Image: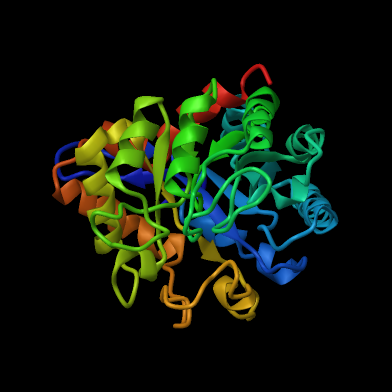
Length: 337
C-alpha cells in the first residue's frame, strides 16, 4: 500500500486510490515521544488523516493545552512526514506532498468549565471534533452511563452553538440517548458519533440505538465504527466483526453515513485507557474490569476493505466509508469557521 492513499484492488474493477481516515486514536495521558512516533504505522498503512486525542473528561484544561503544545511541537519537528491540518484543503495539500494529515479531538468538554471562550481556543489549538460528554454528566449534558438522562442543559445548548461557530464537529459518542438526540437536533451543523457501534448488534450502554443512528444520518452526520472488542461483542477484535458493524449501519442509513473510529491506543507500554480511568467514568458491571482489546488500524484496514468487497460494496461506497464521509462532514463544519 502507498503511504498517502491506499492502493486497493477490488475483484470487480481496477485498482483505486482510497482516502483513509481514522476518526479517533488515543495516546498516553502524559506526552510521550515514543508513543506519538508510532503514527508511522498509520502512515505506512496508507491512512491520509488521523485524529489524535488530547484528553478526556479526566484531564484539566492545562493538561489538554500541554498535550496540544507537545503534539504541535512534535509535528513541526517531523514536518517532512506529518502535517497539522484545520480544513479539507489543508488535508488535501498534506496528502499531495506525501504527508499524513493530523488533527486533534477532545472527549468530554469538562475542560471548558463554564467558560464558552475556551471552545474557540480549542479550535485554535487544532481540535476539529469534540465529544460534549464522556460517559457521565457534566455542565453540558448527560452520559451513556447516567441512569437519568435529562438532556442538554441551558449551558449545553450554548456550547452546541459555540462549537458550530468555532468549526468543531459535535461528537455524541459517550453521551446519553436524550442528550445525544438534543445535540443532533439543536445544532445548525451536522454531528457525528466518532467511535460508536450499533446497540442492535451488541447491547452495551456505550453502543447506540437505531434511533440515534437514524437521527444522526438524517441531519447529515456519520457513525464511526469502534474497534474495541467489548463494543464489537467479541473477545478479540477482528476486521470481520468490524465489517459486520459497518454493514449494519450502512444497511440502516446508507453508505454516506458510516466511517471508521478505531479507538486504538499508542500507549507506550502503559495500561489501556480504561484501566487508567476511575470507576466513576467506567462503572463496574459493564465489562470494563476485563483487559481491553482493540485492533490496530494498520493491522485491520486491508481485512476491512476485503470484507466490504466480498459483501458487494462498490469502490465508491468503500471510499466514502473509509474516509470520504468524514471529509464531506469536515467540509461542511470546518469551512467558514
